[in-house]
Image 1 (spheres, rainbow, N blue to C red):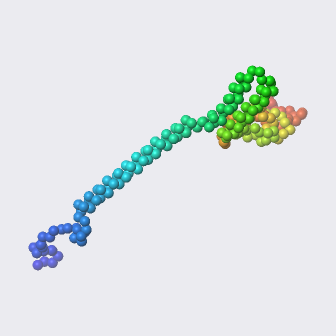
Image 2 (image 1 turned 180 degrees about the horizontal axis):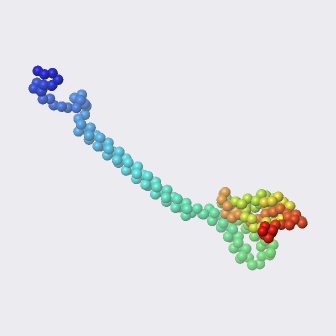
Image 3 (image 1 turned 135 degrees about the vertical axis):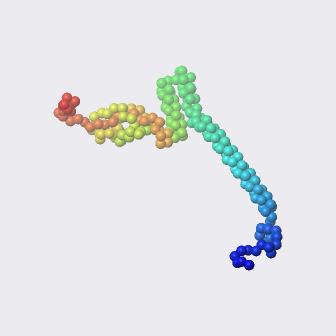
Length: 191
């Protein structure tokens, strides 16, 4: 007999079973069925999660549309008394000039209060305040003893909503006073 070669003539036919089945574990068909059931449960859970996400997205879109549609509701409600006051002033044809003035002042206070509730604030720089190109618009530069690039006068107040400028304040800005006798350079002097 030669060494190194197996002999097959003495082998008996044995049924081959996985070690798990030999040790009392579940048969492979049962394991496969359980795995397929688990995959189906996970698939159902995933589909439910996707449906929930889609429903949440649609709900948020509807809420955003409503918020945009009715965003000015409170502001409009705050303006209604202002409209009422103006209509009352126009309806009263026999009011004295002083009564009309008092009514306009009251209406202005109502309007200012409504704007403040909506976080709209005035930009009203005072003379001597540094010119801010983000909040002010220079309409003219005038010679002044004030420091250059400071506000000399306000032509019209500006307004801002929170930190966003709705309209800049229209201002006159100081520029240095040219000294008497000083000859400014002209275009012909440069040739």
